[in-house]
Length: 125
Image (cartoon, rainbow, N blue to C red; front, side, top):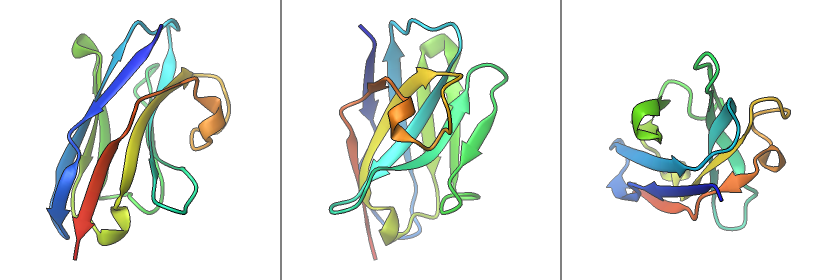
């Protein structure tokens, strides 16, 4: 069974940085997409960024472009999300997710088969 385990969340002041990690194990597809999502209380889960393992293509939500960077270390089976210039509105539970590379728009949660348990990010003003 595929497992995703996030780490790296925490509390930081506005303007600060955090790096989230997600270890992916036992994935069954040869090529796939790995994504980061977030969900704030009372809001829907939204796509933050994704990376396609074939070619390393990356995509970002407009709200995080220029501030967040998604990357992967294939040797370590680890996905990262470097978050800089954090804002209070970035406060949310962050989840990593994995799905087949061909499966629809990257930002739609339903296209991902597997999810981590989430890690909390809190940004204070």
